[in-house]
Length: 72
Image (cartoon, one colour):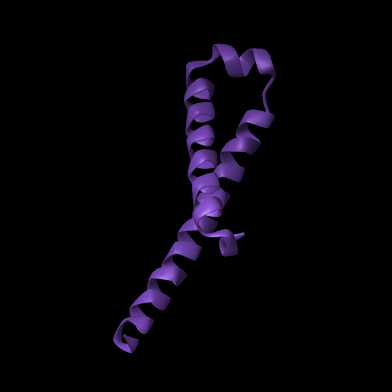
């Protein structure tokens, strides 16, 4: 059904952009965490939250990479 090819192309482009956005956010959060000691990260509520957010981004990226290996 050729009529859906453009739609699929647009969705794949958006998925690729979403992946790049997630990767950018992950890298930013990871940089914040790496700028602090392990003690600070474990004992500062904001850094604990940032760590949880970073880990969530990583999980999303891993699922996307597994499902769509061409995104990397």
